[in-house]
Length: 461
Image 1 (tube, rainbow, N blue to C red):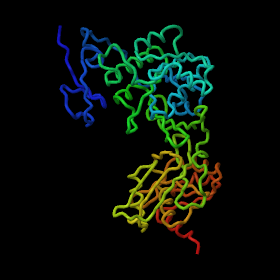
Image 2 (spheres, rainbow, N blue to C red; image 1 turned 135 degrees about the vertical axis):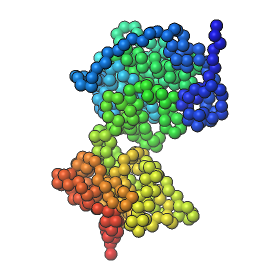
Image 3 (tube, rainbow, N blue to C red; image 1 turned 90 degrees about the vertical axis):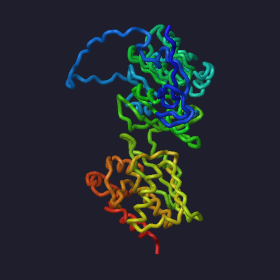
Image 4 (cartoon, helix red, strand yellow; image 1 turned 90 degrees about the horizontal axis):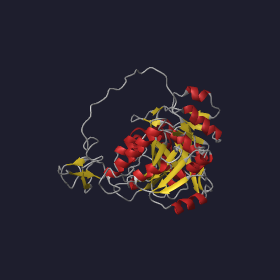
């Protein structure tokens, strides 16, 4: 019998090495290589245990032809359906990640109960909790009466044999993928080989039967889903469940979706009865704001097709240090440095001897450059001690030359501001169509210096 070959697999990225080394060549991480056998399973490839067969020809077609809409299972939870693009797609695999205790299991328990009450067969398999613990959570979220089928199991072959009995399930939830293991791999549960092989078996089951499979994944301290990144490439969709521990709201964000958009979010509020949908996130993010406080500006942002208004708070204070602090929460620190440089170079506003702190209210995270104008207005307001108008919103991108550049979806942003009672807006020039259709007062600075002059000119004599 041929001697089994030993290989070393990185537990962070899945790179295979012929010999052990302290540092992985693929991702650069230290002490992540683990010895694993390559007798069979994922480590040695699908054809290592049997003779190679002759390939068969497949039918080729053209780009033109009929397009069928992906069949979906609507959960009835509006924010979850929005993030997934309209519901769970039959035959798809979805990966849901998030910090421990953020509410992943609670959300999926509520979704499973809603689908089961609608007549769908839902199977919930937990590898981390006992059935009694899942029942306690179901009682807390008022879902104990739903006919969800529960199991506590980690072996993939046993799971597949269990759900094969009876009617094909419409939705299978596995919590979590890091606890699964399969007989096809010899390594220990939780290793790269086991996670990859187990996920591959469940994805193959989803594609062959038409059942939707949801895999729950842990995240690393950097916020990425733990385990091999190849799992994210194998699944059809990746959702991140985000939220700060000190805040009561949660955001479900799609970062990959083969059947829908990747820029939609679902907003939930955590309570003692589970997760509650937030139909109007702007009211949540703007709650309890101080109207007369300097350094606060309301930014009209976009998340997919949904406009979201959020308050940006800044504090500019004299620094006793030779190198002033730059602290950012909820925004890109490099972008803050760029806005500060533009204000100093083109507007004459000096921040070199001041500490700058920036916070996005409510723990919300902003990723689009349209927040540049709101950040600049808040910084100037904090430095001068002049409060911005309480009924004014800001959005626009700032270039390195100091020009204010237009952004997309100006009309939707202004409509949301008008709906929430805002009477003024500072937006880039070149949005004439959006301006003509709105009833609120508009100021369109061509360059950033125009906005700085306007804020400084509001100082009472």
